[in-house]
Length: 408
Image (cartoon, rainbow, N blue to C red):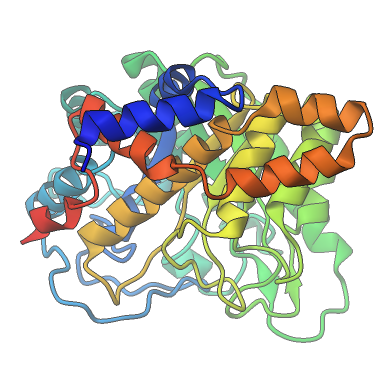
């Protein structure tokens, strides 16, 4: 039996035979950031109140033991998860993961200083940071409306939260020397028949206009807006639909679009949408997730759609214009393992895309040789991806296929 290095050399030769340079693929894989989300670790509890209850259509199912009970335990679990994830990593935070030193700080009063410790943590870990305003689990979101609310007081509160969140994002980007994507997802919508679908959307657009009014250095912060098909409590009508945000981004040009793989109809695929935005020069944020029949945010698997998403990004030459992030929360599994499984699978899918013989495939397609195109695509499915992945983990100083043994 060949040792690990022998396995990699055999894989390298096999890929070279179809025109793929594995060393080049590994270099790109190492340098491409994937943003992993902190909220898988604690079921989106945050640091405002460790006994808080999720509201606003956000729910985490499962009662696996081991959920952290305080900030120190949370950070310990998060660090253990990050230690299992190879490659350039960013950490996505929600606004509820703040440090107030025991003081009561409402969402419309957050400041960069409340997140100083995250910058210190990121520097120690050698990672970047992304940010998310938290427009849910708050008394002023109990109506089911925030930025699109007909109540000006509620709207103003959340507008201020959005403005301050952008400042936190810019603080992260400047302090760490890599851009922070501040992603805005709002819960707003109705459970049942909706008569006036226009007015809430007009209010939402006006609210975002106010949030994005102050220019922010794009080298430090990029704003994204995230759509959804439906949610718990907004099954009939979601104000921030995919069509709404597509038009808002194209018209205002003050933010980018975020597409979450779990926020669409089961017959829709995010992978099929990517090229349509890149064709018009758009920049994108992706939340890679795994829906099961509906927006259930299961842990990312190395499934067909995850591979298709990464393949489409690579095929389009989109690695410089597509920000890859994860978003899932499963309380039925060991939470550290869940984050590691999802992040490692996302990067495996990216590796598979980078190991595809694009030049040969494009040439066959352009020359009308559709037989060769299909034959080569099918043969690629059984190429020795695992050996190249093992090599990547080894060079990154991360565990390979037996990583789960570190959980014991």
